[in-house]
Image 1 (cartoon, rainbow, N blue to C red):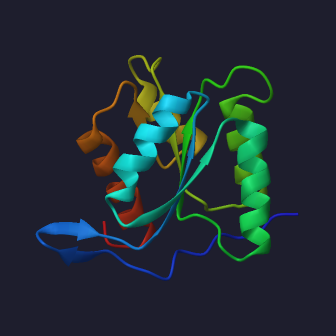
Image 2 (image 1 turned 180 degrees about the vertical axis):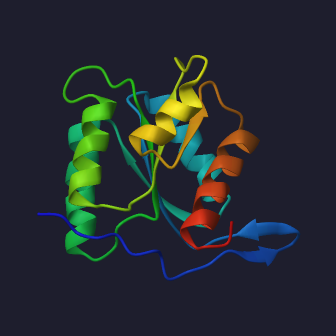
Length: 151
């Protein structure tokens, strides 16, 4: 069963010189430290942050969120998920079940031309690892602005 993703109800607004947003993001990474740091960084955007340790966990959380009518506004997905289903397989499931839900590809293994390939496959954007707090925030804001028709 697929559900068409509708853009979030909230929008970006200014607050103390920085764009702020009330919404949610799902961070999928197998490394606990990256989930913890990512959650802390993304929490500075006044967003609810869901974390998942792998593809199966992410899909289960998305199914629960869908039932509660609270799908995240964007998913940040590590493409290298050992064991279980891969990041690309997780992405394929998300695209079938929740068309239009923006997914940012995250990996430490992007090579030349990765940006074009990532966009061709259907990802909303990409974030190379290791990333900085500013890099993470910039990518998430850019995708959220596109979702809201602001960029």
